[in-house]
Each structure stands twice: as structure tokens, then as C-alpha cells.
Length: 146
Image (cartoon, rainbow, N blue to C red; front, side):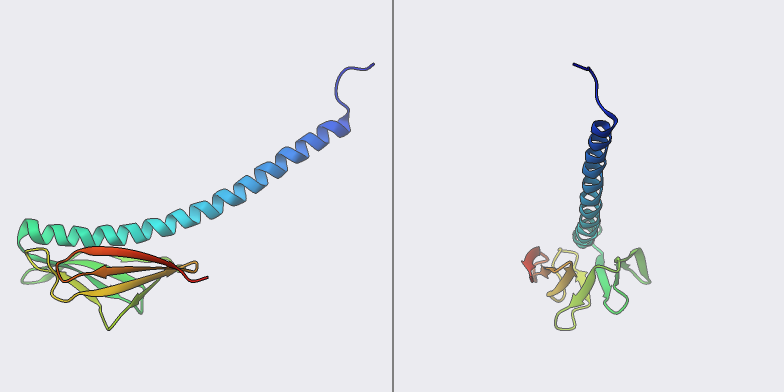
């Protein structure tokens, strides 16, 4: 009886390992894309909450202004001159949509908003609705549209 492996057995084992690596890499890339998109949505929600907190802390109006045609938004500080604190463009696979011409979440010095509304974020057949209540409370709802 001979000890060891034949060349065919080694080639089969290497091919199986390469197959596992290929499947894993593909899954990892898809997972990374979904995490990046989710990160942008979380960043937008964080920026809304930041504007609210800064309004309360500094007793100055802050807000988030949306540009739905260019798929971007700005965090702004309202003083004598409107100061842009941050500008963010969303990636091509994320679509910002407004409801009822809602294009700005402007917070009072008490954390409430001047006008409540909703922003819809659509990505990969998932819709997230960010609802901004009159009190300034920010609520996120998720709906699958498959």
C-alpha cells in the first residue's frame, strides 16, 4: 500500500478550496456594499440628531437642508449668515425623496422643528422613511418593497 496523495487528489482539494474562497469573497463584497449604504443612512440620521442637539446646546437654529434633485444634503447653522457645517452627497444606489415638498428640517433652540415632515430613502428594494415630528423627535421606519 502506498502512502501519500496523488496529483489528482491534490488538484481536487485545491479546486474545492478556491471555490470556497470565491463564494466567500462574493458574499463579503455584497455584505460590504449593504453596510456602506446602511452607513450613509445612519450618517443622515446622525446629522439630523446632531442639528437638533446643537440647536439646544447653542440656542441657535440649526437644520438639515435637502437637495433631492442632486441627491445630497447640508447641515447648516443659521446665524446672520447661513453657515454650512457639512455637505454630504449620497451614493448613486441611494435615492432621497421628499414628501409634501419637505426640503428642510430646521430646529428651534428647544429642539422642535418649524415644520414636521418625512424623508424617504430608497435603496435595493428597501424603503426607509425618516419621520420628523413637530417636537423634533426623529423616527425611522423600514419597509421592504419586494
